[in-house]
Length: 439
Image (cartoon, rainbow, N blue to C red; front, side):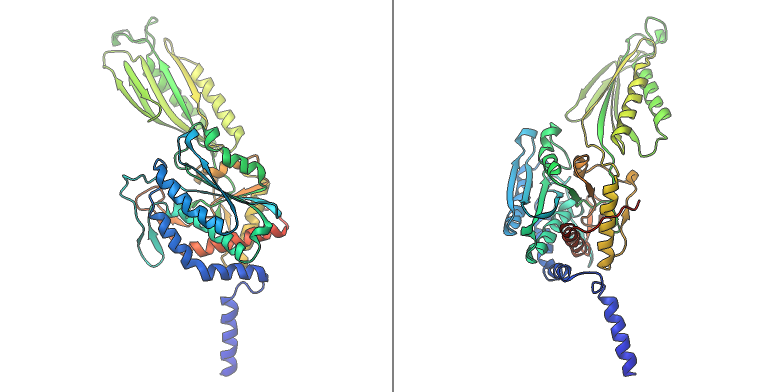
């Protein structure tokens, strides 16, 4: 019986210690740091969640930034607050360690949430043993704390000072400032410096997946005019079809020609039409007046486009412009396209990085990591690294659910898990591991 008991104990020990064969001594130190300090970072997460940092609450965004800046300073990093007055936002946090070895790594977070001071969702509350409800816990204060804890683990092991790492936490991810060229300048500059980008958004809420691609997000405005006249004269040569018919034709042809294309969506989100129309661009609101016996004179439609590659965006815009130019009698129409989030297209490098992250995850006993379907992934700040980096992945942050709603939750088990995976991934990138492609 004693031999059986000893054998059973050994089996249990092997199962409970998945790190033994797959991780080196340094990686074990990183894991142990997270095990020993996770409660400290959980308390920090609670502190940050209880600070309102809705995008337009500049004071709150800066307050969250100040708390985190002190934490990065304690790790020996240079910190900077990028003032946001030129794009009407609070600003961004940037922390750096430069001059070391290995890949130059950009870690991306954001300080703001969708919950402004008038939202009912303001404070941390415990749902059950593993679940916390709170504003921004998943999107993405949990991810910010994961960035910090992973770097703290590397610092504790004496490695951080030997690395090349830049952290950018934007203050306007949820509602970007304007012009976008100013709003995203710090992020783009960091991307041009970096070899690798790691995004710590929540993704699809499943820690077994990451984003190797994200679709774009940009806007368009359709402006249509017709000849106002008594409705009894509609379709006659001097009057024509009216603005509403022309707008309807255009929208239907958008649908008819483009709706079947994979990874492409285009949504008309606001329409106002009639005899008199006013449109407030800054608030995206409109008013309209018309009568049933008057041919419509004006229509304004606004919408968005989401595409997977720059080429897909270009093709879509050219198709939309061609459709708009083919007017019904007695009407005129123009379409304009606004700047927005570019696509984070899937690349060989992104898949290589995902494979490395998956290997890390499996070595730590957390299982394989696969790619999120791009059709299920919205735009995010990592999109602005596209074309500048060798490789990047997103969704390394806090697992959760119901982002952007008052029911937003986070899974507390993700905090140590994701911190360990991030720390070991960065360490292996620093060591210069081989990267293999697997699509």
